Image (cartoon, rainbow, N blue to C red; front, side):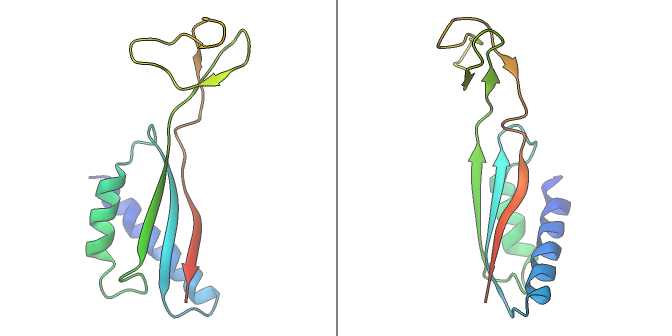
Length: 113
């Protein structure tokens, strides 16, 4: 349920961007959302469709690019997506360490009319 306030903020930011750039309507919002960000893209879509009614964002498309989490090998430096039940680097076999890749959540771009 924490997607509701983030979606409300997303609409406010998109409307501000639209007004600041002499736009009349938001056409599309491009988001980047890491799988470990804590946000569920499907919930953001649902809330966006409901709470954007009557705003400059009504009818806008929301496109969410998902980012898969990656580990980094401390031995060879390889960045990799972990396999099920394994943390082993596919290049050298050493267990990978967590990174911030996959925790992203930001607006990549806003298209206005």
